[in-house]
Image (cartoon, rainbow, N blue to C red; front, side, top):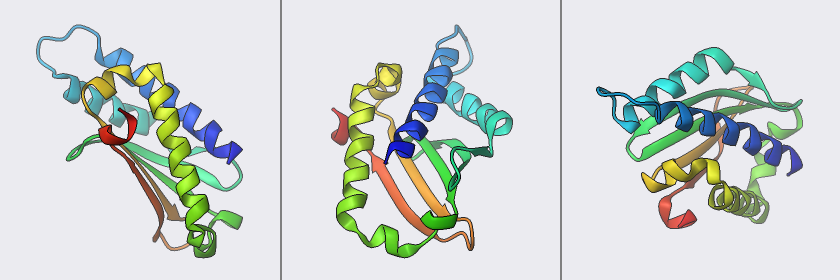
Length: 142
């Protein structure tokens, strides 16, 4: 789970950068529109990004429904096995770690004030099927 904490920190920094950029004065863009633009810029410039030997961040998008950020990861090697995600206790423990990190992260303050949802999707690098999805909603982090 330590690599997941590193991944979370990388994304936290990316989101904090996006939020900071979104706070720049603008007469024509809403907060959500700026977040959408910055997420697209981040994906174009920073993705794909190898996070560790088994995990790659493929993209980060801004979503309208529910409003928030969605992160897409590909996993390979030892993590690219359905059996790993069958352990519901471990999957739920990882989700709870994500929730605690979102709660504690002051860099996400503006996003949380706007009631953003943070969705983390993990897909198989072998065939693209969904291995795991975690949806962190305002009800989880408030």
